[in-house]
Structure formats: structure tokens, C-alpha cells
Amino acid sequence: MTISQAGSASAFDGMFRSMKRLSASEAGDVRPRKLNVITVGSGDTVQSLASRMAYPDAKLERFLVLNGLEADSRLAAGQKVKIVTY
Image (cartoon, rainbow, N blue to C red):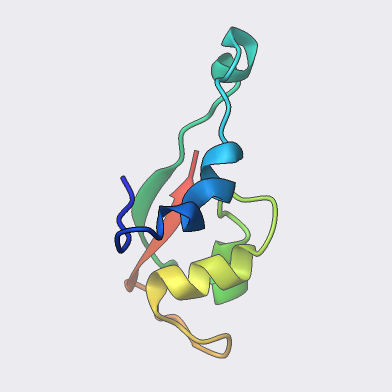
């Protein structure tokens, strides 16, 4: 669903044109991602947990945004954080 001022719907044309129906083969290859809340272990770091994110790129940046952290944030054992996995 999108919403815009009257007469401004063309702002979404590029997005709508980028969509296509998936073939059965493509649909079979889709792997849903899941949001997991995990407990930080004693040896875990921001970087080690970010490396577990289910993305091919920007894992650290995604982890930081998802958890409201900074790159220099330190994690404490027992702390809860979110990661996206398959």
C-alpha cells in the first residue's frame, strides 16, 4: 500500500515497475528471514554477532541500527540483542 497527495502517485512508478511475478523456481528459492532475540555470551562482540546477520552486505550497519547501537558499543554478557537469521 502506498499513499501520496492527489496527483503525486507517479512518485511510486519506479517501484511498481521494478516488481515482477516470480517463477515457481524463483519462489522455491525464497528463504524467509526471521528476527531472533539472543542473549549475548561472554566472548561476543558487536562484530561477531553482526557477522551472523542473514544479509550478504552491510551486516554491521544493519546490526547496529536494529539494536540502536554505535560501532564502538560494548556488549555485556546476558544482554539481549536482535539478529536477523534464516
